[in-house]
Image (tube, rainbow, N blue to C red):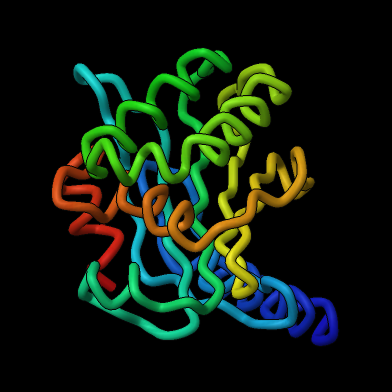
Length: 189
């Protein structure tokens, strides 16, 4: 009986340390591995639109940072994860990303990353939408490429370009983020 209780306590301890935060009932991991580097949770928050819950986003970095400019300038690995709280079609995903890119980039910047934006749109179209509970990840790799994932599996190929990485990350951390309080929460830990 003592071994059973000790084992149960160990399992409970591991289970409670596996998630650093809970946002609207969705557990957010304290850290995630990415290409041999362990990234730590920088912050997490909920994206809403017209009073609807859309997703819980979490930002992972090599070290905590509270300044968007520092995060955007860091060439090291980063991950933005989105756990969906409702179904989103491929068209909704693509439109939201294009809108966020347009709000945080100049026309000239958008033109320089047009091919990468098209590649991202093609990846989202191939995903074909995502349902409640699905986890979409955007990995910003140190080689300057960006990899989209769904439920732990890479989707499409890596998309090259540091300018594209910064433009895409500005959707959440730029001067006109998708949601101001979400930006604050991603930088709050």
